[in-house]
Amino acid sequence: MAHKYVEVKEALLREIRVGKLNGELPSEEALAQRFSVSRMTARRALEELAAEGWLERGRGRRSRLAQLRFGQGFFRVRPFYRFAESVGARPSTRLLAAGPAKPPATVQERLGTSDTIRIERLRFLNDDPVMLEVRYLRMDLCSSILEHDLEAESIHEILVRNLNLPLTQVWQRLEATSLRGRVARLLGVPHRTPGFRLERVTFTFDTPVTWVEYRMRGDRYYFEDVFSPQREVQE
Image (cartoon, rainbow, N blue to C red; front, side):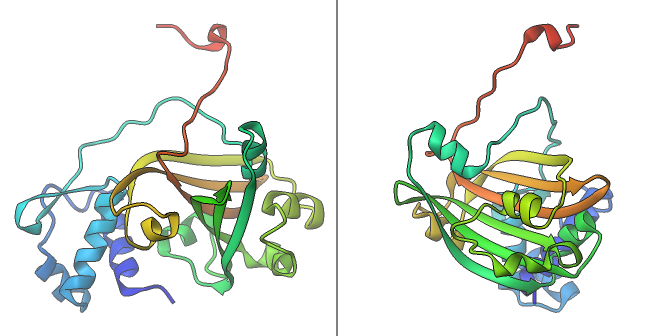
C-alpha cells in the first residue's frame, strides 16, 4: 500500500501536468486539510516534488511551480554490469524488496495496469552503493520473474531469454535531482547530495512491460556519448 505522502504527491503531480495548478501552491496546512493528512505528510509530498524539480520551495514553506524545463538531445544507458565492466569496477547487487504491489498512480498510467510486481535493488561498484533501483513489472507478463535470483541475474536478460519478451522500444528521461532521506541513507551520502534520476519504460512492441526509476550518485556517475555530427540537423 502506498504511503499517504505518495498519494498526495501523485495527486498534485497529475494536476501540475494538466495545468490545473499555477503559480503558488496551497499551503501545507491547506493541503493537509484537503487530503485529510497531517501537515508533516503534506510537507513531505511537497519536498519530494521539489527534489524532482517540479516545485521551488520558498520562505514560509510556500511552494511555487518551478520554471519550465526543456528537453533536448538523446542518450543511451548501458546495463549496469556492462557499465561496470567498461570502467573496470566490480559490480554487485543487494535485493531490498520483491513481490506483488500496487504502483503509484503515475506508474499505473505508464504501464496501463495496477497489477504489478515491485522490485527494489541497491547496486554497488567496488562495494560502494552507487544506485537505487525501484522497478514495477506487469504481473500478466512477468509473474515468474520472482522465481529468479534477482541479486545475481539481469532483469533484462530474464525478460528476453526466460520470458521470451522481445524488448523493442525504450522511453527514458534523465534529470538532475537531490538525494534525500532514505535514498541518501542507502547510498551513503549526506541529505540533499546532488544526483541523477533516470526514469524508463520498456516495451514489447506497443505493450509496456516494465517501469523503472534509478537514483544515482552524482559523484559516481557521468554520461557521455559518441555520434556522427553529419547525422545532426544543422540550423
